[in-house]
Image (cartoon, rainbow, N blue to C red; front, side, top):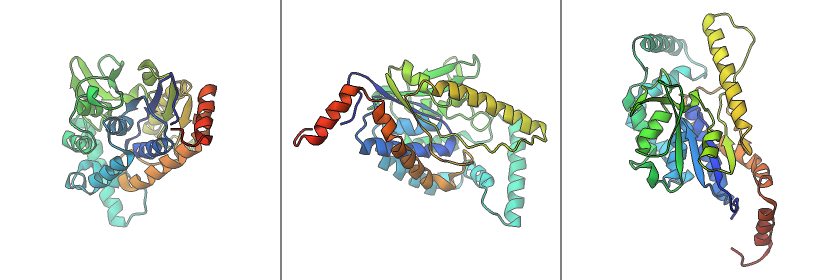
Length: 309
């Protein structure tokens, strides 16, 4: 079995909404290659998939839950699905375009009069499909959910209490989902302060960290014709710089090819899992290269010695 002997191997799973389904493919490859994970830190979608795996679900079981959720009445009737359909870039009829334009206006107006555009029950249903109702300390692999306290602006790493509540807080996308009150904290998406929680994994005790990045690929045209476009671009630059600095602390960075997929578009969920597998396999050489020399020797001895475990 491939492992960092005498060290802890951490997995830092980044946020990105539905793009986080890539994490399932990465976990599948790590299992197939018998690369054992000692702890998991997750932000947003990374917290959702990471918590499910840490709690004992196999990648195959998580995949089945994705299927079940997409077909469920809860998702089919949800605002989350409506937003995803609106943001889907596929060719649409005139009437579909008109309907989407009306939806977008409605969602925009909702953002001005309410703290979120998604009903809390939509996100709770999503989390309940993937996460068992247990305490974090009951997970089979130590797990850390990364969130942001809107009051102090500090990163909060949740390592105790309700697993579902921790994931809900980490997934609370600003403007889309209500922030979660936890003690003195008012918690929102961990991606505000750490899109890929490499440092959280280090602080939790990981000696080596595999980071999985599921960012949306941004098409920058160079034309910024509205204040909104300039505002969004400025925010992208800030978050990109913060992410780059944190990724420098990772031993291996896995970056699946996702394209310009909106965080709420579930239409490519199954394909994302395959993209995660492909990216993880491409990174296997880098993962093995990061192993200590003596551990590489032990691995070779096991490989060529019959009967060795």
